[in-house]
Length: 67
Image 1 (cartoon, rainbow, N blue to C red):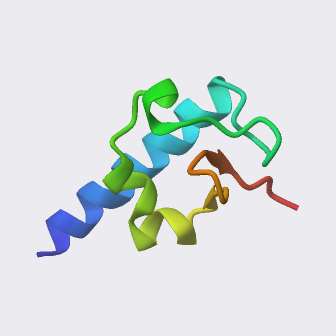
Image 2: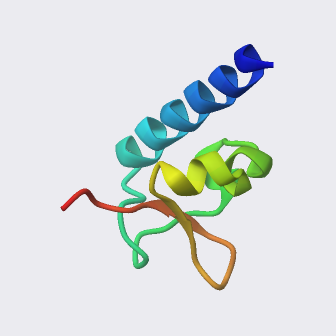
């Protein structure tokens, strides 16, 4: 089971990297999953939220900046 969690964690990190490359780094520049080319279930996973992936009210996603 630990392998499954590790795999999801890795997918979340790869999603974050892709979002940063595509400029989805704020609520204003957030993008739809289709624009990002990322499965929405990854973006909605609680591990994604822990890693700073946020969803806007209209269903777009962005990476929360590190402070």
